[in-house]
Length: 318
Image (tube, rainbow, N blue to C red; front, side, top):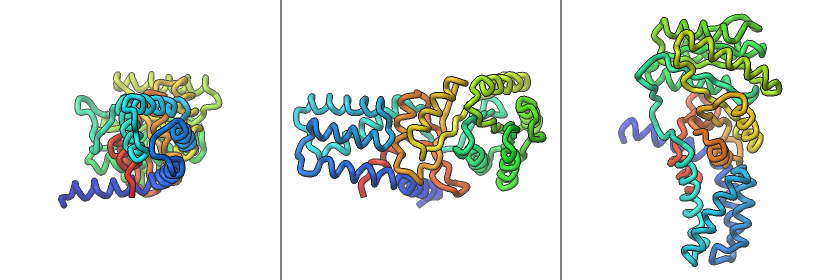
């Protein structure tokens, strides 16, 4: 086995382990729902609907999946319960294919300009700063020159946390004192990253959603000052969500989308929950692609989201 085959195998093992609770919950409920039944009928579909909703796929997305399966059952006349898993797998894969444009195993960046600027948003407690640190690690590991900007100057520990990650990964952190103007920090960070020919700048922001107007104004100001340094900045607005909170994560995503355009999602803490279905629902309902998933505490546990690998792992029976 070549070195890339080894890393892909390790990634798949991590994905399988991270989704184990969701898989176990879904399959045990599905097995119970179809016990004693030969074909997919209304009772089976009702049970499947409940299973998907309790796996935090979300009501609207669940109804969409059920409707598609109903059409297949009506078209094919006879669909056995033994086929249900494969049909469900195909329909979930189709949904993700419609709503997700990312599908890569490489930590690559656009080559037409640098630095590539990622503005990271999300409420406190979802793993935002940890995700930034792990992103920095993955990009540096891929040979990229990484800078971090500590623009969450509202929360006392935020600057310290990102500095600890900077030291751990071995990348520069541009910061000011607590309470400083976040836009000023972002301006300094991008100016420094540009002057030092960095490949990527990742900027942390405050996680205050209770004051939407304040957050909206702050994010707009950050974007405006960065455009003075690099007109295309930011290239990406990444929203970090805690997958273990299920539908609460979906509500946060909707609220943040109302405050600022979101271009990609990172869903963390999937390894500790049976609510992995939230990945499917959020991607479908927001039409925003999931780009990263967090599957553990280790520094390399943040993975690029690959929809085929996700579906294969979720529906793979042992």
